[in-house]
Every structure is written in C-alpha cells, then in structure tokens.
Length: 262
Image (cartoon, rainbow, N blue to C red; front, side, top):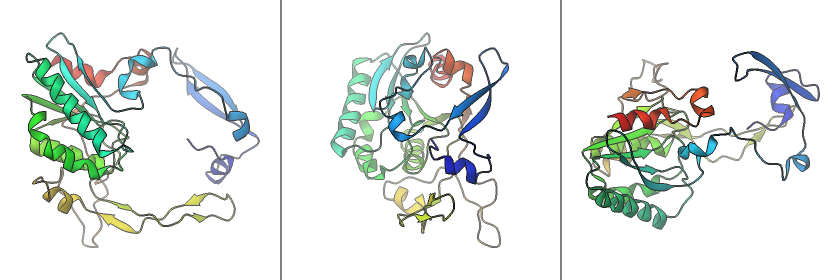
C-alpha cells in the first residue's frame, strides 16, 4: 500500500525506477519479481489481480454481512463487521439480521463475530450492540481476530468477551488496548516528501468500556517510567489459529473451519 517511490528510497531500498522483490512462488522456490515505477495515471482503471479462489474467502469481501454457514459439527451464524465507515442504522440492521438467522436456525448453537478485517473508527456503534445484546446471545460465541483488528475493534472484542462470554480465535490483533491517536495535520518530511502524522492523544478503553459494564480485555503493566512493558503491543487470542499463504491460495478459511469443528 506504499505507492510513493520516495518511501522506498527513504526506507533504504536504493530506488532506481523499479524495485526487485524476492518472493516464494507456489512451488516454494525463490523468484525475483521486478516492479516498475507506475504513475497514478497508468494505475487508474487497472484491475487488481487476486488468487483464483479469492472469492471463497468471504471474510475478505469489503462489506458487513450476516449469513448462516453449515458445517459437519453443526453450522454457525457468522457476522462480519469489517467496514467501520457506516451508519448506525446499518449496524442496527446487522444486529437484527443476526437475530433473524439465530431464530431461523434453532439447531445452531454457535455465533461468530468476525473482526479480522476491522481496522477501527466506529466506537459510536458500541451503543447499538449494547442495546441489542440480548438478541446476540448463543451457547457458543467466537470473536475472530487478526493483524488488521485494531482501534475500536479492540473495544468490541473486550465487550463481547464480557457480555457474551466469547472466545477469541485467530491471530494476534494489530495493537494493544491502549494507544496513541490524534488528528494533527501531517508534517511533510523535506527530502522524501512523505507526510508524517503525529498522534497527540492517548486512548484508554477503561472509561469507554465502563459505560457498557465491561472490562478491558487485558491488564496493562507499566514500568517505573510510566511506559508500557515492551511486550505489551498486541492482544493474543484465546485460541491461536494461523491462516497461511497456502490457505489463501486454496480459498480456505482455517480460522472459521476451526470454529465449525467445535
């Protein structure tokens, strides 16, 4: 996602109109791929190239949705909360759709809340989930997490663990519960011309979660200088399930498959 050649130059990649990346191909062999410098005009209208089975990875779709997914040990009602830039009314519909699928599948005892692709920016929706929490209760509730799970998604993770006794499954989240944030105008570095945004506020989830009767997902530890311990930089899931590149190539969702086996 770093489109500026100046970024690579600044990062020490020795920019020369193109870059050579070394990757492992599908045969597990090292392969050199040359990536040329492309202008925005040249990029416009070009289609992204996805793996053949990409469409099977439903959690990668850029939308919020609810559906019933069948499985050998019983299915689950899966709700993907991916797009934070949405109206409160849309989240209300998401809650109602979840309740509908739970009622329409009475033999189903599992519900999944997928936060793997949720980057944050939607804490105002917490009240909607709290208001409809009774509609979302199931015998087994799982919250799926990954490296993109961050910001307000950390609040949802903590709230669902508290209110629904949810089990978190997947990979470590993208950050810790507390973090810096802010909206100061970016400063432009003089040589690479890259904008750097400096956070000026510290987000602590304790007060926000207390409004909804929930506790933070993890306890924070600070040293004598008031800094978080070095290892406090992410939230580990209750159950670690790794989604590797071969799974993605095959359109296989290892995390959801683990839930369906329970």
